[in-house]
Image 1: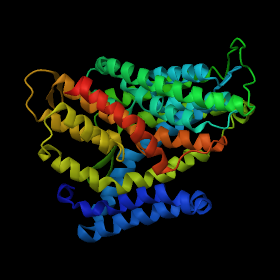
Image 2: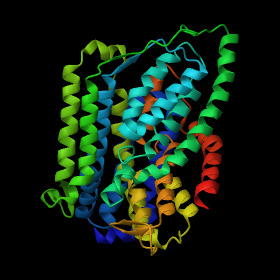
Image 3: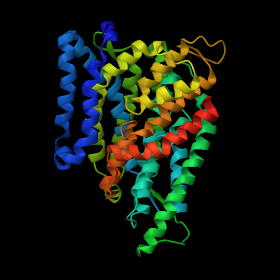
Image 4: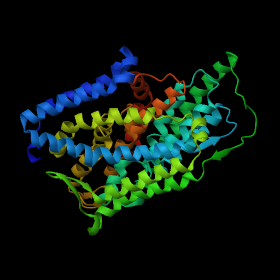
Length: 446
């Protein structure tokens, strides 16, 4: 697929159409979109694939499609599916009152968990307790928005398990615990977001009380109960599978894979990861009573929506990624703050994992004489921090910046919470996150 490195950005028009569909269709035809969104995904995918076949060759088009499906999408959706199933079989119960202090505590716990069980795992584990805790409220959307900011994104910056971009860095020689260098950034961002959230939630809480809405357990000592605790074993299985997928390719016995077509193959490490995750999901569903899932209001709707929409996103964004791969080194990005914003802004709309790899590779060509020795070259520590932080944290800028964002939104809407539209959510991120990232730039990357 060497010729595709000269692909025109015009081939990215279907990707723009895909994004506009996700943003606009729920506003103008919500019922149709909810039931028929797969047809829009097929339409935009074909509007990329057919011109690709004409401009290059049918064989090239098939190879690109197989590359997206077998090398990118399958492991992505299997990981989300596994964590969705296992976390859905854990019920965190308690007399949570939905007060500002309780909500801050739940957000903090979820954020800290995300670095060790992944943003998807932490999001699926914590979203239902926070929805239940605030069920008595009418003003709840802001809590879910901050949940996406913190649990579904920011918390993933501490370890390679936290978010896939950091796993890719680990696979290319970045030490496993090196990402703990991002802890000061997590501490600063988390503190600012929690303070802003608390002020906002306290105001909304007072409005709820004034309207005559009262928390059921206000003032009572928290009584925590966790059901389905055995599913923690299956979460550990999934975490091990993710770590193995990063570590095994460096072992000669697992370096190859099953040949699909052309240069495309499904790696042995990926196959092992898929098998372990699916086994964990299967055992979780078989060993957990159905009533627990009913109590959790578990349904397949959120993972189905993510599976449908993200196959379209993965297919149509491929030309943009190929263009970046070919021209990333010639973009003139040599400063830490430039890498932070470039990686972050593109990660807001493209898959943050390949975006991270593009700029990691670009950083490796800059000729740093000291720093982190990776498979793509030596990278200065601050620049590696900038790329990592941009890829992980700025995934919160849009619903599609990170897969858990979409799943959290879907679960919240199933729970009766009216969430902002695509552009409405971006309004929140522009007002809250962009100023925060400016602070990050000034403190860490100038």
